[in-house]
Length: 292
Image (cartoon, rainbow, N blue to C red; front, side, top):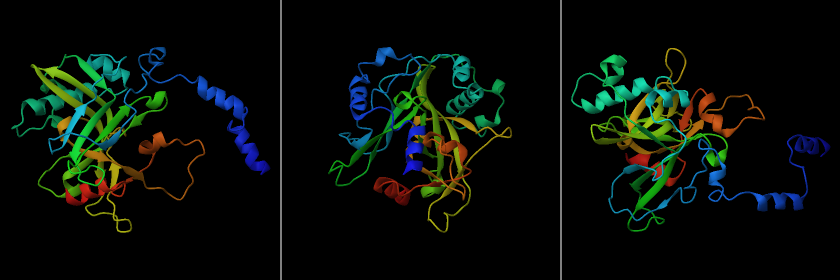
């Protein structure tokens, strides 16, 4: 007990009294009321309620839309924004994406082109911290309508603290079944821009690729690894929001060593060598990966 007490003291868990703890809770600012007290680059999330659940959408298909409210405090030019988010290749991959969008029937893919061969870009960029995916998911919870919504987040300060970068399934080949036709991506940034009078809702992502052509024999789950460039940095790409098919959930493949005591879960997608695609996250995920 003495050893446990010393550890609690070191972590500040025994500081103060029950009364002082209650007083601190009562004095905490409300997220909505305190918004103006935060700097622009640490805006509290407005849409913390109802991240997922049934909805009244009648479309019957899959749709992904950016949040209603844009994030504040971000530069609006691609060069300045790339420095702000520490992604120097952002201008390059954005122009490669634009080439693919403007040349959908070309035999050449934008990722194979130098930046000078891609369309010029000087448009205003607007950043968002989340997007909402709506899909048909019949269940007792969703009722006869069967429509379900969930919010996918990519924010540098979740609840004003650490980053949260969600993962998604991206449709890459509709002719292949299940995971074979999908890729896993981690959303680094949601953004949109208007080019030639057309709006482009997009996401800047890192890729996680399948490490084998079969699921893991012991768990039945597919294994993915983060794709990296020659310099060791994760591969970067821009995708259209329409290519997002579903949210994803990755589980680290733990080794034999214990994690450091100061390890935080927000680092999970950065430090492990490989991950399981968790098809058991919920019944919707299982149904999606089984029937897709």
